[in-house]
Length: 65
Image 1: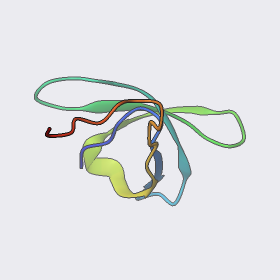
Image 2: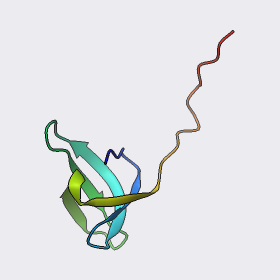
Image 3: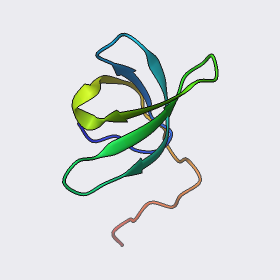
Image 4: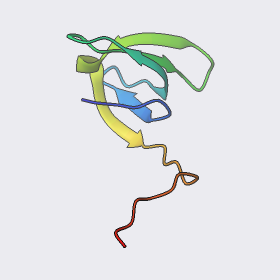
């Protein structure tokens, strides 16, 4: 599963948190911060679902003219 920084995710272990960092090419790793302040390093295979996706409202959209 592909996640971005700022996404709130749920892991297969039942824990949830916000993605702080992402790296890797063949195997994608994520640094996840849980609500109680712990930091978890996990692979993409361990992510169950994306609970909430961060939306940047400040960016400009491309519009055809």
